[in-house]
Image (cartoon, rainbow, N blue to C red):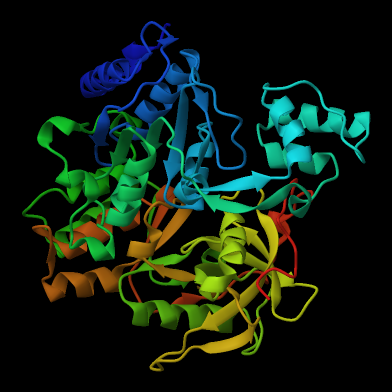
Length: 510
């Protein structure tokens, strides 16, 4: 195998070699492109740690490519073929749909942790088609499906390796071929986890039960999960299990946003010094903008990032007022954040069904309009492979200075949503947007509060996470003002052919 290792930095090459050695111990030789049948046990947990721009994603992609060349199959959450003793597998995971989509946009076949923990149960008749598509069986004959329909499914699968998507092109709905969802019991093989700073202890324990060889990719400068007491999972590993990358690759792109992010590592830097650095950058590079107000038009697809909940709620109401949104309804195009599934325990199957659609806690969605039944919403799940779904919804609009939110409409039970025009920086982890607005008065307040997290001033951690969410342009908003939108809310940017696969059954959740 010939990998372009000359593109690696010295620390990336060292990390690649260390991971290759661990994989060799697990029976996969990525340097010789050979595999051995999996045996009991694995290589445990390794972590690749580095700040923004250090090349973690590049290394993950190269390792995944090398595993594929060696004959390791990549598994996803939509279908898993029958197990073979000699089969070696890799799953590439992220904590959220949005984080997984960031990888998929770079041609890395990622799925969410949830879609690996819970697997679909296929109807045996349609499972024959799935086995054929993945190369484990002969072309089947299925009652009700023509040869032309099977041809369409096969052609789709050659381009987009999604079994549900292929079955949908044959004219099937998810409810036709998926009987339900079950918690995975059998172990897998090798797991890569991106955005590992977002992992909590329970997720980590679940993953260790499934993957005998687990590789975590994480940024130590981000914010730890709220329930982790300021410590990230990979920080608990022994030092020999941590492979550290330093800033090299994206620094060479002369990216002012990354320059600002890495400047926050200076212990002597004050908030006032940092703002002056932002102002200097804005004078010479249009990728950094100092803005006296929040732009309402940007908030529809890229939430304003804030520290305080009170700020978030104020900005959401300002956004809705700017678009003349009625108090008792949503406008098509309004952004929402999934706040979890509100279903009794006895409806576990329905909960799994909703979550399988991508409606897991923290998922970002765009409201498209009401469903066919009261309480249902048509939604576009950002980052999902099949984004357009309809689901029983409970929409909550939080009110300033009031404990109870206003609920413009709700099903009896189903997916709960908060408004998404502004989100806390904690909630933004794992996501990226082309343009990001950061609400500087909140970070100033954090600096004045004098709080620290794991020995680092909280405002610096907040600022680092917030500005590294921006892919192309950073807006540093300096005042409590809102710029009026140039045009009404729209969903035209989401227009696309009907999703190839949907679990859309409007009796779910009721």
